[in-house]
Picture 1: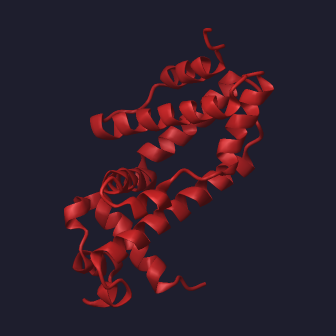
Picture 2: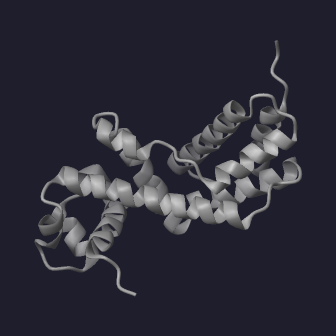
Length: 189
């Protein structure tokens, strides 16, 4: 199976962004990272913005594929411990290996999207099977605002990932368990 040249370049661009930051994301750097002749990236993506847009689209596609697989492979958690374990595994993937590099690139793109709303539109969270499992779990537990609690829980998990990405270290399971417990708590009032 051959991979489309644009996909190869977008994947290389994700790596360059993760390793060198937004300022290091150049056509030449992507050519080098992809192991392709100079000028290849600019032949496919004439402008830096076109390259960045392709990178963001590919990043979202890879994230969505990972989340779809994770959600489809996992049953709805039966209890808070199972949900905590699933979220802990997700956090570990986001903070190690290739997942870490994609997480760095994702956050760089999120910051860049403040100045480029067209990128924000691509980065908007999408529906996926993993998010569905969280919603289904909270609904089965009788949580009143399933959608709101799901979004808050997942945003808090993303916040922990960002905090540890920047500050180093892992996320202790008890921190994730605390977020799950808070999502299950009845709101006051």
